[in-house]
Image (cartoon, rainbow, N blue to C red; front, side):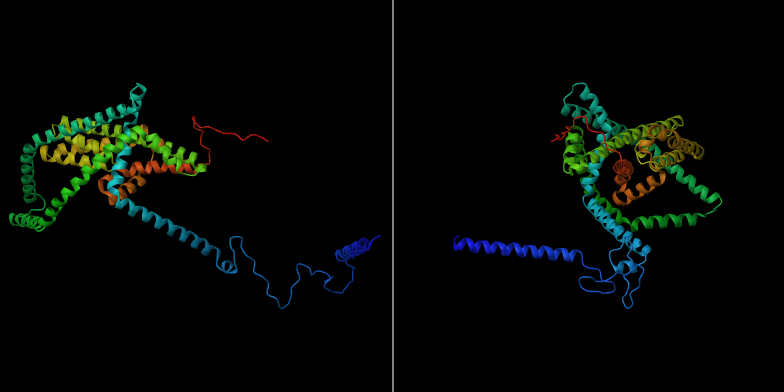
Length: 432
Protein backbone atom coordinates (compact mmCIF):
# COMPACT_ATOMS: atom_id res chain seq x y z
CA UNK A 1 0.00 0.00 0.00
CA UNK A 2 1.44 3.35 -0.94
CA UNK A 3 1.83 6.22 1.46
CA UNK A 4 -0.96 8.20 -0.26
CA UNK A 5 -3.50 5.44 0.28
CA UNK A 6 -2.57 5.13 3.97
CA UNK A 7 -3.08 8.87 4.52
CA UNK A 8 -6.48 8.74 2.77
CA UNK A 9 -7.60 5.80 4.96
CA UNK A 10 -6.66 7.67 8.15
CA UNK A 11 -8.61 10.76 7.04
CA UNK A 12 -11.67 8.63 6.26
CA UNK A 13 -11.59 6.90 9.69
CA UNK A 14 -11.19 10.29 11.43
CA UNK A 15 -14.21 11.67 9.51
CA UNK A 16 -16.41 8.69 10.39
CA UNK A 17 -15.47 8.80 14.09
CA UNK A 18 -16.27 12.55 14.23
CA UNK A 19 -19.63 11.99 12.55
CA UNK A 20 -20.52 9.25 15.06
CA UNK A 21 -19.65 11.49 18.03
CA UNK A 22 -21.82 14.35 16.66
CA UNK A 23 -24.80 12.00 16.18
CA UNK A 24 -24.46 10.72 19.75
CA UNK A 25 -24.41 14.30 21.08
CA UNK A 26 -27.64 15.14 19.24
CA UNK A 27 -29.36 12.13 20.76
CA UNK A 28 -28.30 13.19 24.27
CA UNK A 29 -29.62 16.75 23.67
CA UNK A 30 -32.96 15.44 22.45
CA UNK A 31 -33.49 13.15 25.52
CA UNK A 32 -31.84 14.84 28.52
CA UNK A 33 -31.79 13.02 31.84
CA UNK A 34 -34.59 14.01 34.20
CA UNK A 35 -33.37 15.81 37.31
CA UNK A 36 -36.14 16.88 39.64
CA UNK A 37 -35.75 20.38 41.10
CA UNK A 38 -32.53 21.15 39.18
CA UNK A 39 -32.56 23.82 36.49
CA UNK A 40 -29.87 24.16 33.91
CA UNK A 41 -29.54 25.44 30.33
CA UNK A 42 -30.16 21.88 29.16
CA UNK A 43 -32.95 21.12 31.64
CA UNK A 44 -34.70 24.37 32.68
CA UNK A 45 -36.97 22.59 35.17
CA UNK A 46 -40.73 22.21 35.38
CA UNK A 47 -42.90 24.76 33.52
CA UNK A 48 -45.08 27.14 35.51
CA UNK A 49 -48.86 26.69 35.23
CA UNK A 50 -50.81 29.09 32.99
CA UNK A 51 -52.61 30.60 36.04
CA UNK A 52 -49.39 31.46 37.86
CA UNK A 53 -48.57 35.13 38.50
CA UNK A 54 -45.01 36.36 38.11
CA UNK A 55 -44.19 39.00 40.72
CA UNK A 56 -42.58 42.19 39.45
CA UNK A 57 -43.51 41.68 35.78
CA UNK A 58 -46.34 43.71 34.15
CA UNK A 59 -48.93 41.54 32.46
CA UNK A 60 -49.52 42.31 28.73
CA UNK A 61 -52.89 43.96 27.99
CA UNK A 62 -55.44 41.90 26.09
CA UNK A 63 -56.01 43.35 22.61
CA UNK A 64 -59.38 43.45 20.87
CA UNK A 65 -59.70 41.73 17.54
CA UNK A 66 -60.18 45.14 15.88
CA UNK A 67 -57.04 46.71 17.37
CA UNK A 68 -53.44 46.41 16.32
CA UNK A 69 -51.60 48.12 19.17
CA UNK A 70 -51.82 49.01 22.87
CA UNK A 71 -52.82 52.60 21.97
CA UNK A 72 -55.86 51.35 20.04
CA UNK A 73 -56.85 49.10 22.93
CA UNK A 74 -56.90 52.09 25.32
CA UNK A 75 -59.46 53.91 23.09
CA UNK A 76 -63.12 52.96 23.70
CA UNK A 77 -64.67 50.73 21.08
CA UNK A 78 -67.51 53.17 20.28
CA UNK A 79 -65.04 56.02 19.76
CA UNK A 80 -62.94 53.87 17.41
CA UNK A 81 -66.03 53.03 15.33
CA UNK A 82 -67.11 56.70 15.23
CA UNK A 83 -63.64 57.78 14.11
CA UNK A 84 -63.54 55.11 11.40
CA UNK A 85 -66.93 56.24 10.06
CA UNK A 86 -65.93 59.91 10.29
CA UNK A 87 -62.83 59.79 8.16
CA UNK A 88 -64.54 57.62 5.58
CA UNK A 89 -67.47 60.04 5.35
CA UNK A 90 -65.02 62.93 5.04
CA UNK A 91 -63.31 61.22 2.10
CA UNK A 92 -66.66 60.52 0.43
CA UNK A 93 -67.73 64.13 0.97
CA UNK A 94 -64.53 65.46 -0.56
CA UNK A 95 -64.93 63.22 -3.60
CA UNK A 96 -68.57 64.28 -4.01
CA UNK A 97 -67.60 67.94 -3.67
CA UNK A 98 -64.89 67.55 -6.31
CA UNK A 99 -67.33 65.82 -8.68
CA UNK A 100 -69.87 68.61 -8.22
CA UNK A 101 -67.21 71.22 -8.97
CA UNK A 102 -66.18 69.37 -12.11
CA UNK A 103 -69.79 68.98 -13.25
CA UNK A 104 -70.46 72.66 -12.55
CA UNK A 105 -67.40 73.67 -14.55
CA UNK A 106 -68.31 71.63 -17.64
CA UNK A 107 -72.10 71.76 -17.28
CA UNK A 108 -72.37 73.28 -20.75
CA UNK A 109 -71.22 69.85 -22.00
CA UNK A 110 -72.76 67.60 -19.34
CA UNK A 111 -76.32 68.94 -19.69
CA UNK A 112 -76.53 68.55 -23.50
CA UNK A 113 -75.14 65.01 -23.26
CA UNK A 114 -77.70 64.15 -20.59
CA UNK A 115 -80.52 65.56 -22.72
CA UNK A 116 -79.17 63.57 -25.67
CA UNK A 117 -79.32 60.40 -23.59
CA UNK A 118 -82.95 61.12 -22.70
CA UNK A 119 -83.84 61.72 -26.35
CA UNK A 120 -81.97 58.57 -27.37
CA UNK A 121 -83.93 56.52 -24.85
CA UNK A 122 -87.16 58.01 -26.23
CA UNK A 123 -86.33 57.52 -29.93
CA UNK A 124 -84.53 54.17 -29.70
CA UNK A 125 -87.70 52.08 -30.27
CA UNK A 126 -88.44 53.99 -33.50
CA UNK A 127 -84.91 53.31 -34.75
CA UNK A 128 -85.37 49.64 -33.87
CA UNK A 129 -88.58 49.48 -35.94
CA UNK A 130 -86.82 50.92 -38.98
CA UNK A 131 -83.87 48.55 -38.53
CA UNK A 132 -86.26 45.60 -38.50
CA UNK A 133 -87.72 47.01 -41.73
CA UNK A 134 -84.27 46.56 -43.39
CA UNK A 135 -83.28 50.25 -43.20
CA UNK A 136 -79.54 50.97 -42.93
CA UNK A 137 -78.60 52.08 -39.44
CA UNK A 138 -77.45 55.57 -40.44
CA UNK A 139 -80.54 56.15 -42.58
CA UNK A 140 -82.89 54.91 -39.84
CA UNK A 141 -81.23 57.18 -37.28
CA UNK A 142 -81.39 60.18 -39.62
CA UNK A 143 -85.07 59.62 -40.46
CA UNK A 144 -86.06 59.36 -36.80
CA UNK A 145 -84.02 62.40 -35.80
CA UNK A 146 -85.35 64.57 -38.64
CA UNK A 147 -88.91 63.42 -37.90
CA UNK A 148 -88.53 64.35 -34.24
CA UNK A 149 -87.14 67.79 -35.14
CA UNK A 150 -90.02 68.39 -37.55
CA UNK A 151 -92.57 67.51 -34.85
CA UNK A 152 -90.94 69.86 -32.34
CA UNK A 153 -90.59 72.74 -34.80
CA UNK A 154 -94.20 72.33 -36.00
CA UNK A 155 -95.52 72.37 -32.43
CA UNK A 156 -93.50 75.46 -31.54
CA UNK A 157 -94.74 77.22 -34.69
CA UNK A 158 -98.38 76.56 -33.77
CA UNK A 159 -97.81 77.74 -30.21
CA UNK A 160 -96.08 80.96 -31.27
CA UNK A 161 -98.71 81.77 -33.91
CA UNK A 162 -101.61 81.31 -31.51
CA UNK A 163 -99.82 83.32 -28.86
CA UNK A 164 -99.21 86.21 -31.25
CA UNK A 165 -102.85 86.20 -32.36
CA UNK A 166 -104.22 86.17 -28.81
CA UNK A 167 -101.92 88.72 -27.14
CA UNK A 168 -103.99 91.86 -28.04
CA UNK A 169 -107.21 90.38 -26.67
CA UNK A 170 -105.52 89.11 -23.53
CA UNK A 171 -103.87 92.52 -23.01
CA UNK A 172 -107.25 94.28 -23.07
CA UNK A 173 -108.74 91.76 -20.66
CA UNK A 174 -105.70 92.10 -18.41
CA UNK A 175 -106.32 95.85 -18.19
CA UNK A 176 -109.92 95.16 -17.28
CA UNK A 177 -108.76 92.69 -14.65
CA UNK A 178 -106.41 95.26 -13.14
CA UNK A 179 -109.25 97.81 -12.91
CA UNK A 180 -111.46 95.19 -11.27
CA UNK A 181 -108.74 94.51 -8.72
CA UNK A 182 -108.43 98.24 -8.01
CA UNK A 183 -112.18 98.53 -7.48
CA UNK A 184 -112.12 95.52 -5.17
CA UNK A 185 -109.29 97.02 -3.13
CA UNK A 186 -111.33 100.18 -2.65
CA UNK A 187 -114.76 98.63 -2.09
CA UNK A 188 -113.65 95.34 -0.52
CA UNK A 189 -112.67 94.59 3.06
CA UNK A 190 -109.40 96.55 2.76
CA UNK A 191 -111.13 99.90 1.92
CA UNK A 192 -108.02 101.46 0.43
CA UNK A 193 -108.24 105.10 -0.68
CA UNK A 194 -107.12 106.50 -4.02
CA UNK A 195 -104.12 108.15 -2.39
CA UNK A 196 -102.99 104.84 -0.91
CA UNK A 197 -103.37 103.07 -4.26
CA UNK A 198 -101.44 105.81 -6.04
CA UNK A 199 -98.71 105.61 -3.40
CA UNK A 200 -98.35 101.84 -3.87
CA UNK A 201 -98.28 102.25 -7.66
CA UNK A 202 -95.59 104.94 -7.35
CA UNK A 203 -93.52 102.67 -5.11
CA UNK A 204 -93.80 99.87 -7.67
CA UNK A 205 -92.69 102.21 -10.46
CA UNK A 206 -89.79 103.45 -8.32
CA UNK A 207 -88.70 99.85 -7.69
CA UNK A 208 -88.78 99.15 -11.44
CA UNK A 209 -86.76 102.30 -12.20
CA UNK A 210 -84.26 101.44 -9.48
CA UNK A 211 -83.73 97.98 -10.89
CA UNK A 212 -83.36 99.09 -14.50
CA UNK A 213 -79.62 98.43 -14.36
CA UNK A 214 -80.24 94.87 -13.25
CA UNK A 215 -82.75 94.36 -16.06
CA UNK A 216 -80.29 95.84 -18.56
CA UNK A 217 -77.45 93.59 -17.36
CA UNK A 218 -79.79 90.64 -17.66
CA UNK A 219 -80.61 91.66 -21.22
CA UNK A 220 -76.92 91.97 -22.01
CA UNK A 221 -76.27 88.50 -20.62
CA UNK A 222 -79.08 87.16 -22.79
CA UNK A 223 -76.73 87.15 -25.79
CA UNK A 224 -74.28 84.89 -23.99
CA UNK A 225 -77.14 82.68 -22.80
CA UNK A 226 -78.47 82.47 -26.36
CA UNK A 227 -75.02 81.42 -27.59
CA UNK A 228 -74.86 78.71 -24.92
CA UNK A 229 -78.33 77.48 -25.85
CA UNK A 230 -77.41 77.35 -29.53
CA UNK A 231 -74.17 75.50 -28.81
CA UNK A 232 -75.97 73.08 -26.50
CA UNK A 233 -78.68 72.43 -29.12
CA UNK A 234 -76.10 71.54 -31.77
CA UNK A 235 -74.29 69.27 -29.33
CA UNK A 236 -77.60 67.59 -28.41
CA UNK A 237 -78.36 66.85 -32.08
CA UNK A 238 -74.94 65.40 -32.82
CA UNK A 239 -74.78 63.39 -29.59
CA UNK A 240 -78.31 62.02 -30.09
CA UNK A 241 -77.46 60.89 -33.64
CA UNK A 242 -74.33 59.03 -32.56
CA UNK A 243 -75.97 57.59 -29.44
CA UNK A 244 -78.75 56.15 -31.59
CA UNK A 245 -76.41 54.83 -34.27
CA UNK A 246 -73.36 53.68 -32.28
CA UNK A 247 -74.68 53.40 -28.73
CA UNK A 248 -73.84 49.71 -28.32
CA UNK A 249 -70.29 50.15 -29.63
CA UNK A 250 -69.72 53.12 -27.31
CA UNK A 251 -70.97 51.13 -24.31
CA UNK A 252 -68.78 48.13 -25.17
CA UNK A 253 -65.74 50.41 -25.45
CA UNK A 254 -66.44 51.87 -22.00
CA UNK A 255 -66.95 48.43 -20.45
CA UNK A 256 -63.66 47.14 -21.88
CA UNK A 257 -61.83 49.85 -19.95
CA UNK A 258 -62.77 48.09 -16.69
CA UNK A 259 -61.02 45.06 -15.14
CA UNK A 260 -62.10 41.73 -16.59
CA UNK A 261 -63.68 40.56 -13.33
CA UNK A 262 -66.00 43.61 -13.22
CA UNK A 263 -67.07 43.79 -16.85
CA UNK A 264 -70.06 41.44 -16.76
CA UNK A 265 -71.42 42.98 -13.56
CA UNK A 266 -71.12 46.53 -14.87
CA UNK A 267 -72.52 45.55 -18.26
CA UNK A 268 -75.54 43.96 -16.59
CA UNK A 269 -76.14 47.06 -14.44
CA UNK A 270 -75.71 49.35 -17.44
CA UNK A 271 -78.20 47.46 -19.60
CA UNK A 272 -80.75 47.39 -16.76
CA UNK A 273 -80.26 51.12 -16.20
CA UNK A 274 -80.77 51.83 -19.91
CA UNK A 275 -84.00 49.82 -19.86
CA UNK A 276 -85.15 51.81 -16.81
CA UNK A 277 -84.30 55.10 -18.50
CA UNK A 278 -86.22 54.15 -21.64
CA UNK A 279 -89.24 53.03 -19.63
CA UNK A 280 -89.17 56.21 -17.56
CA UNK A 281 -88.91 58.57 -20.54
CA UNK A 282 -91.65 56.86 -22.55
CA UNK A 283 -93.94 56.68 -19.52
CA UNK A 284 -93.30 60.35 -18.73
CA UNK A 285 -94.14 61.38 -22.29
CA UNK A 286 -97.38 59.41 -22.17
CA UNK A 287 -98.36 60.85 -18.78
CA UNK A 288 -97.51 64.39 -19.94
CA UNK A 289 -99.62 63.91 -23.08
CA UNK A 290 -102.59 62.75 -21.00
CA UNK A 291 -102.20 65.72 -18.64
CA UNK A 292 -102.05 68.18 -21.53
CA UNK A 293 -105.10 66.67 -23.24
CA UNK A 294 -107.12 66.58 -19.99
CA UNK A 295 -106.43 70.21 -19.05
CA UNK A 296 -106.67 71.35 -22.68
CA UNK A 297 -110.19 69.92 -23.01
CA UNK A 298 -111.42 72.05 -20.08
CA UNK A 299 -109.70 75.12 -21.52
CA UNK A 300 -111.46 74.61 -24.86
CA UNK A 301 -114.85 73.94 -23.24
CA UNK A 302 -114.73 77.21 -21.28
CA UNK A 303 -113.26 79.17 -24.23
CA UNK A 304 -110.07 80.13 -22.43
CA UNK A 305 -107.60 81.91 -24.75
CA UNK A 306 -104.25 80.27 -25.53
CA UNK A 307 -105.73 76.81 -25.01
CA UNK A 308 -103.17 75.12 -27.23
CA UNK A 309 -100.12 77.02 -25.86
CA UNK A 310 -101.28 76.36 -22.32
CA UNK A 311 -101.74 72.66 -23.08
CA UNK A 312 -98.25 72.59 -24.60
CA UNK A 313 -96.93 74.30 -21.45
CA UNK A 314 -98.60 71.62 -19.31
CA UNK A 315 -97.03 68.93 -21.53
CA UNK A 316 -93.55 70.38 -21.05
CA UNK A 317 -94.07 70.98 -17.35
CA UNK A 318 -95.12 67.38 -16.76
CA UNK A 319 -91.53 66.30 -17.45
CA UNK A 320 -90.75 67.69 -13.99
CA UNK A 321 -92.76 65.32 -11.76
CA UNK A 322 -95.08 66.64 -9.06
CA UNK A 323 -93.94 70.26 -9.46
CA UNK A 324 -93.92 71.01 -13.20
CA UNK A 325 -97.50 70.17 -14.12
CA UNK A 326 -98.82 72.00 -11.03
CA UNK A 327 -96.95 75.20 -11.91
CA UNK A 328 -98.06 75.12 -15.54
CA UNK A 329 -101.63 74.50 -14.33
CA UNK A 330 -101.40 77.63 -12.17
CA UNK A 331 -100.59 79.64 -15.30
CA UNK A 332 -103.73 78.29 -16.94
CA UNK A 333 -105.77 79.27 -13.86
CA UNK A 334 -104.39 82.82 -13.94
CA UNK A 335 -105.25 83.21 -17.63
CA UNK A 336 -108.76 81.93 -16.90
CA UNK A 337 -109.06 84.40 -14.01
CA UNK A 338 -108.09 87.35 -16.20
CA UNK A 339 -110.24 86.24 -19.14
CA UNK A 340 -113.41 84.82 -17.60
CA UNK A 341 -113.52 85.74 -13.93
CA UNK A 342 -113.10 83.90 -10.62
CA UNK A 343 -115.81 81.27 -11.14
CA UNK A 344 -114.25 79.90 -14.33
CA UNK A 345 -110.83 80.12 -12.72
CA UNK A 346 -112.03 77.96 -9.83
CA UNK A 347 -113.43 75.42 -12.29
CA UNK A 348 -110.10 75.28 -14.15
CA UNK A 349 -108.30 74.96 -10.81
CA UNK A 350 -110.49 71.98 -9.95
CA UNK A 351 -109.73 70.42 -13.32
CA UNK A 352 -105.99 70.87 -12.78
CA UNK A 353 -106.19 69.30 -9.32
CA UNK A 354 -108.27 66.41 -10.63
CA UNK A 355 -105.82 65.70 -13.44
CA UNK A 356 -102.94 65.82 -10.96
CA UNK A 357 -104.67 63.32 -8.70
CA UNK A 358 -105.38 61.05 -11.67
CA UNK A 359 -101.73 61.24 -12.68
CA UNK A 360 -100.35 60.56 -9.21
CA UNK A 361 -102.65 57.72 -8.17
CA UNK A 362 -103.54 56.00 -11.45
CA UNK A 363 -101.36 56.90 -14.42
CA UNK A 364 -97.87 56.78 -12.90
CA UNK A 365 -98.34 53.51 -10.94
CA UNK A 366 -100.09 51.91 -13.93
CA UNK A 367 -97.77 53.10 -16.70
CA UNK A 368 -94.40 53.30 -14.97
CA UNK A 369 -94.83 50.36 -12.63
CA UNK A 370 -92.49 49.36 -9.87
CA UNK A 371 -89.40 49.25 -12.10
CA UNK A 372 -89.00 53.03 -12.01
CA UNK A 373 -91.00 53.83 -8.87
CA UNK A 374 -89.31 56.55 -6.80
CA UNK A 375 -90.43 57.87 -3.43
CA UNK A 376 -91.94 61.40 -3.64
CA UNK A 377 -89.45 62.72 -1.07
CA UNK A 378 -86.55 61.58 -3.26
CA UNK A 379 -88.23 63.27 -6.23
CA UNK A 380 -88.62 66.60 -4.40
CA UNK A 381 -85.05 66.55 -3.06
CA UNK A 382 -83.67 65.62 -6.48
CA UNK A 383 -85.58 68.42 -8.22
CA UNK A 384 -84.44 70.97 -5.63
CA UNK A 385 -80.82 69.88 -5.97
CA UNK A 386 -81.09 69.94 -9.77
CA UNK A 387 -82.48 73.49 -9.73
CA UNK A 388 -79.67 74.68 -7.44
CA UNK A 389 -76.94 73.04 -9.55
CA UNK A 390 -78.18 73.58 -13.11
CA UNK A 391 -81.48 75.51 -13.12
CA UNK A 392 -84.38 74.25 -15.23
CA UNK A 393 -82.18 71.74 -17.07
CA UNK A 394 -81.09 70.28 -13.75
CA UNK A 395 -84.72 69.89 -12.67
CA UNK A 396 -85.48 68.05 -15.93
CA UNK A 397 -82.66 65.52 -15.61
CA UNK A 398 -82.69 65.06 -11.83
CA UNK A 399 -85.48 62.49 -11.59
CA UNK A 400 -84.32 60.29 -14.51
CA UNK A 401 -80.81 60.36 -13.04
CA UNK A 402 -82.16 59.19 -9.68
CA UNK A 403 -84.10 56.39 -11.40
CA UNK A 404 -81.01 55.23 -13.30
CA UNK A 405 -78.79 55.35 -10.21
CA UNK A 406 -81.41 53.45 -8.23
CA UNK A 407 -81.44 50.61 -10.77
CA UNK A 408 -77.66 50.56 -11.23
CA UNK A 409 -76.91 50.44 -7.49
CA UNK A 410 -79.46 47.69 -6.92
CA UNK A 411 -77.99 45.55 -9.71
CA UNK A 412 -74.40 46.13 -8.60
CA UNK A 413 -75.26 45.32 -4.98
CA UNK A 414 -77.14 42.14 -5.91
CA UNK A 415 -75.28 38.89 -5.23
CA UNK A 416 -76.69 37.11 -8.26
CA UNK A 417 -74.40 36.29 -11.17
CA UNK A 418 -75.40 38.07 -14.39
CA UNK A 419 -76.58 35.97 -17.28
CA UNK A 420 -73.97 35.04 -19.85
CA UNK A 421 -74.35 37.17 -23.00
CA UNK A 422 -75.49 35.16 -26.02
CA UNK A 423 -72.43 36.20 -28.04
CA UNK A 424 -69.91 35.42 -25.28
CA UNK A 425 -67.12 32.92 -25.97
CA UNK A 426 -66.30 30.72 -22.99
CA UNK A 427 -62.91 29.00 -23.08
CA UNK A 428 -62.62 25.97 -20.79
CA UNK A 429 -59.25 24.76 -19.52
CA UNK A 430 -58.23 21.22 -20.45
CA UNK A 431 -57.73 18.73 -17.63
CA UNK A 432 -54.09 17.50 -17.58
